[in-house]
Length: 477
Image (cartoon, rainbow, N blue to C red; front, top):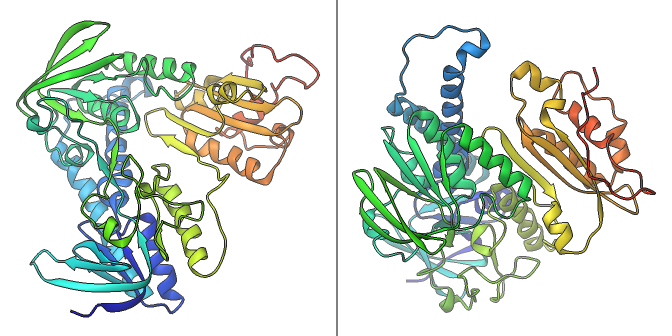
């Protein structure tokens, strides 16, 4: 079988892959995008957008529970998980149609099937009905993503645990959900399921939740979950799993040298990601991988094989859709003869608990580890008067400022609309603005962004030693 020739073949239709395909097809290039299952990749189907859809339904449920606080009398109400799922499915269906329309308009060809390399820049695609096609590109982009990791803990795989995929398809409220992992996925789903009515227990192997963040963030997150009735066990390592998720499951764990036993009805695994690189013929293509299974790339996102690129999670890029989208710009421009690199790029993130956690740049832990001195400004979120109108005072904002200049080194917010607030600071950092530009800016009152001015008004002067930041008493009125 002779291969069909293309200018670019993309293996995987995630954020980077589909955007590369659509963009280069509009430039007049012949493009094929190979996708095994999810049109558009994980984000619109089984990850970012559907999870935030379900999380928002959970937030509405929390408002029902708090209705008296807002002067609204409620009568009997129930959670209908089938309806929650239906709302999510309707959104996903609309997104898939949007993606298919973009393929049609751009001229990029979408080939559904499992793709694997059978030679340099040559991919065999096997469709669901067993038919095969052979495609070859002048350039090939690998964008196969990652999947939830199932550790080799005895009994874990046999328990058929939920991952984020199955959790988004639940048509019932779990009676008692055990959650392995205190990172992004674990925390978001734990809070959502608790708000739907589940009893929830988090088992985290590290000493604290979101352990890569500063201790004050971990403390604030733990306090939030305690207030919402979520049990958290840290420094606990599961040694054995018994039973079946959805029926009855038992975890045996070691904590501080003692064995503990936890029992629940359902088990959600959220302990990390595994790259989808096994079985796709990387060795045949001359593409090397790292010891963790990620595709090995340089700063231009080139692999070890000529004219073969990798982008997104599978390339070891930070596991965010917005980073995969940035990978698209880098790969696309480089294929067209440019020279763009990943070096030094900003990596913003937002954890969509309620309230949100958002950060850009350095936190205190990272700054201290690198020996970078800083001035600290920190205020309670409740200082921002907008929170009083929303009855959402929980949290704080803080910023790190260089000790020898007015450069913003980092910003962290744990509070309502944290992600939106962070974006304003990020733009200032991109522009290289001193913190004083935000301190002196006129922000609309009353908005959450107004708190940025209050925060930066509390930055210690350069000439003074860096003090422990005292809370500002009130925002501008």
